[in-house]
Image (cartoon, rainbow, N blue to C red; front, side):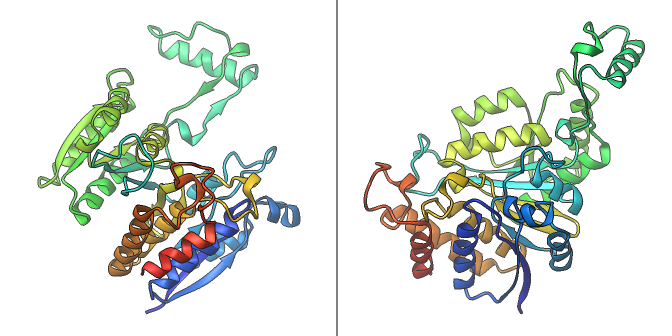
Length: 364
């Protein structure tokens, strides 16, 4: 059966990476009807927006997209292109596997790091509900807070204080925690760790933790643990092999997922998925690196592995396994890899973006 998939080519190095990833997905033999869509700063010059309506329409139709990196234009209404896509499409779960492949340059090469970070995408401080310092509404808000929280007054005045709101709901928490447990069940994972700061933020993170504990009761076959976020960061550096699936709020998840990428070799090997009830967008977790545009230089691994996650999502498990093995084998051999994966970044034997993708195709 052929699958309909939107391919968002992005900008900067995005088109090169999109070509490489598409090449590898096609080489698995899975039949894909690609609907190629342009997005980013180049498109904005013609349409006035980095995300034309046609992009959203395509994703809503196919319910599946592979997205190359996109630059968020400076000085526009978009706080973040990625955040905009997640909000418009209801992609409430961000899933980021952090796994060491033999041959990747990392200080943790001797550790069996294979952690999956499940991040809530719609709430928390990352929702961007903010009030600017110096605005009358900010001063009014601080006054209201001080009236309601007499024992925890904000001492500074509105003209010098910005305020950010942290919404955490029972329904949003239950949805993402259940997603983490379902992922663990479907992928033979043994534990889910809920990350929080409930010792300080008792009515937001406290709600998050108590809701997670309640949901965990529905999954008796999976071990449930909880960790305070700062301790979690230390634990990941000290003994990352002890952890399996982590579920985090939006801001903590954004930070810890980059920490996880650092453990396994950097953003160049870190794939990602954003999933909702009616669609999914798979993407590399790094940016568009415009200074390398057209140089056929950057590492395509993250987007190729995102394509692997997409295949799993589409039910093409065997193809996903073959693609992941091919990526792993090419990295382990260390011959047909980009400059950043060589012990010496100036190694003249390093290959380009497309050449590494072709080597992965040959492995399959």
